[in-house]
Image 1 (cartoon, rainbow, N blue to C red):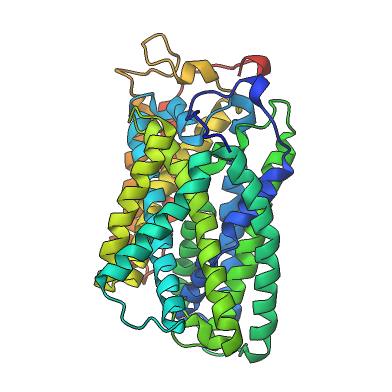
Image 2 (image 1 turned 90 degrees about the horizontal axis):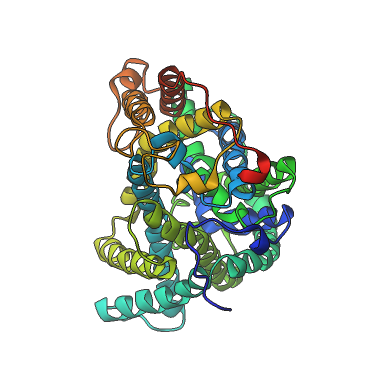
Length: 457
């Protein structure tokens, strides 16, 4: 229970521990949550029939979660976080901007989780007879939830990995009960449905709220594994740990949406598909799963804040991050605009995430997965990753080009890109952003990449 002091610094060979299958439980415990269920209901809310929703869910997750496996590979090889590895493509100073985007990514999901935890707690208090729920009570609930949420991310990697293993088995049992209770009520029909353009938007939504948004966290949890760990095992366990729960729970969410009209509201709407006696266990399950997913987010957000160039200890970054989430949660709870905020946030994630994935994977292929861990932290012109003034302009130019391409092709609640509009609302923003960024990066990086021997990584 000692507080982990290491941030993004390299993990030495003597401090490595664990097995690849630990990643399976880490990602399963993280993704077996109410949020994942809600994403399935959102897919149906776009106008898709149940069969179309299932197809979008499978395709979107099949395309996105291998990214989590790929970004987990550098953890054992290098011993640092994903965003620290990004310095190879963007330079030590250029990567700070991507670290900041990664931090914003985590803060958004953490705040969303805290909002739902607060609503679930207030719903439980209402069932207990506490009906007068003014601002004071809401603030108290938010603060208590924040203190509970702080424990595991503050203690660190070992505690998070252990807790998520136990969470996985509990969540599997509870969601299995939910599936049994909801199954007989589901109305599966292939009639109606949406056009191809809407289907592409659904696939983009599935990718952005799934593997694409988790990809920047890959090496954060694999970096403690021994350097000689099987790469196939790391990739397989990390990818499957998220893919399987997302497909099953999002499908369950889509099924719930055929029964309850406002199933997208996980606190007051979704329980309508459940028998009354299961409402309290469901609300408790919702809170615990949200604490679990926020644990993973909070741990990584502290690392991303360091990668963004904020020179603070990891535990300080975690505390500061949670304080910001408390403020955002308060605003969301009192404004009653949570669903709008969540949909807008998910839609805009693509614009920076897709190009980052394109650059990261292109750089990984170019270097054949070979990085010099010590050089990643060398902020001097002697570093092979220095570029010009600490910025590798090829990576930055590729990122900007990819973001422009993604914005032109996006169909979100915030805005619709001109190319998407011309194509009747079809959303190819993820593919456009990743492909344009990746090709641009490889075109600008014509020099042979430095190769590092395995024992020097």
